[in-house]
Length: 196
Ligand code: FE
Image (cartoon, rainbow, N blue to C red; front, side):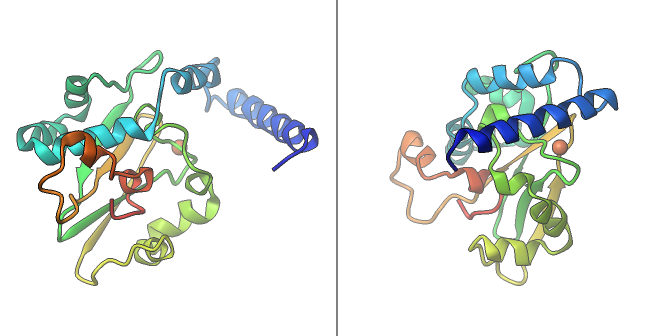
């Protein structure tokens, strides 16, 4: 992507959509500014990775995280209250029998504070519609082949509720520190479109 034409055209489209959303009451006044503040406040996949690594090494933290994610992430200095109101966070953990994947079928709701800006594919119509109907095929396209007997749970985010996945801890990582473990976790792993 290069050239001012492209960015000016995109900016124009964004403004147009923003106006429509505000007019229809789907977007609160100033919400875009608030989101930008959240970006600048340091939303990054490193935050989500830190949470996942802590959950791997600390079973009690993992339990608290799955029961009350908003409370538990405060223990590692993170929060979902980037702006006016705190978003409800639910964290789900993959196991050898169950795999979780997150989508926003309506638009692009995403735990920005923990994962940073969402990837383009997350916002695409193709992902949003297909991952619900045929998650196994979509995950395979991401290079994630799950065993046929693994149950797949698809979580649909919304303006009020955000989701994050704790991947399975990779084999052979018993000797790694929490920081080293966090370095293994990818953004896609935290969305559920990668194994880790
Ligand atoms: Fe959304």
